[in-house]
Structures are given as structure tokens and as C-alpha cells.
Image (cartoon, rainbow, N blue to C red; front, side, top):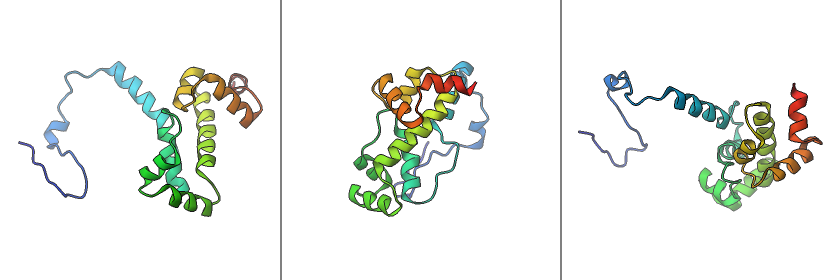
Length: 154
């Protein structure tokens, strides 16, 4: 019978070692491959930089697909107020909107380098409402369309 402890300081599910070695009867290797690929797209390749901007950037990378989080949402995720987050980011020489723009640009370049993804999929993963919005932003960042940039990669 599972035990529940309240006020333990962290959330955890603990399984006996023997359970971890049992095969999963309903395992689906094809689904695992799809989900692993999607997880690799969402996970940052680099460790977040220190400070508030690093923590905010790490949060934004994983939260773009629903549209960029607002300042208030990012602050709530980081356990602070919007005003305090603004002050902290300003002291580091950046802003929430600047971080959103930088994360979207970096992620756009990374995702477009994966030629298996369609422009629509990249649009969704970056939280744009329409591919045209991504194309306009990408032109602003690079001076060229995502398709031309992708072709130039080879």
C-alpha cells in the first residue's frame, strides 16, 4: 500500500527497484521514438546561464508553444512578482520582451536547421499564430525568409 507523507519538502514517487526492471506490457516503440524526438526539440542544448535572465530564458524555451508567456506568467513561474522580475532583468541589461525575442530567434534557427520539421510545426513550437508572423520575424532577424535560410544550410 502506498504511503503519503505531507509536508515532506518535495514531491516524489518512489518505486521498489524490482518494479523498474519489469517490462512495460503496453510499450509502443514507434510512439517512444516520436515522443523522444519531440522532447529533444523542447529541451535546451545548453545549461541556462546564471541569474534572473538565465532562469527566465530557460522557462521561456519550454513555454513558447502556447504563445509567449506574459511577464506576469514568467514571474509567477520564477516565484517573484512582475515588477521585481522587471527590475532584476533591467539590472542584467535586458527585458522580458527582449528575452522572448532572443529565445524565439535562437529556437527558430535551431528548429529550422532540422529539415524534417515543416514551417507550420516550427510556427507552432515558437508560439506564433500564423506562419506569416514567423516569416516576418525571421526576416527581421536574418534578412531572409526561413525557407531561403534553410536552403542555404545545405
